[in-house]
Length: 271
Image (spheres, helix red, strand yellow):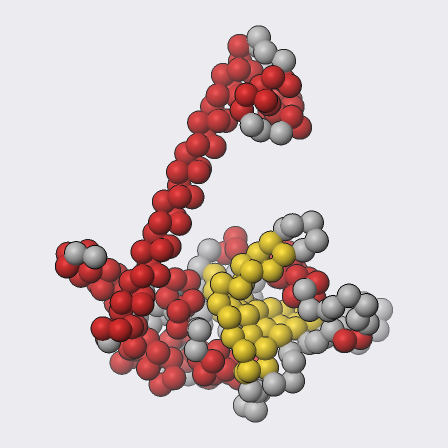
């Protein structure tokens, strides 16, 4: 990497916050950081994290997969998924449901009883107040409608709202997530980890390699999106001409026939 590019990366890294998923993914490879966050959000000072993985892939039997920002397991076997979301659309209720279901679907071995399912926590840390209740922390639990009693199935969903940065443990934690300067952070565990990647040569090199890798992935995604736009434009031109059967358009474009039929129907409805 030439010196000019290196300096550009270093400047970008200094601007990153824990709310930026590239930076968070590296910082949260560290068990003490994840343990601190869980202890504060769950108000469990004795919680001991045993395992942490970032960008952890999970897949269901139909092949639908997600990549969890942070996956952790504590000393009692409880499982945790922490998601950082700057975009409200990525933190919807059904996304939380999906992540929770995938945790369950991937934990039991063949023949194991459902009673062996561990407690699971899906935790969204969001830049904005996604649930619009002006609360710093939201706990979502299942409930029996007729009695109001808790339906204790062991699954839990939480939303932490980074818009509220008051003088409480959760508020100070959210302030740290939104802070780019480690000297301004409240929690030394997070500040030390942030300094490592921003202020040490070794940490900055690790972070630069991650940024470079993600840049390549983003460029590949952009090229793929460009190819899809070209393909859709081709299909629209063929549909406008009306000279080719839909089956042939599907074969030429590589798009499934059902999708080509849906585009044709959509075009017909607009006419």
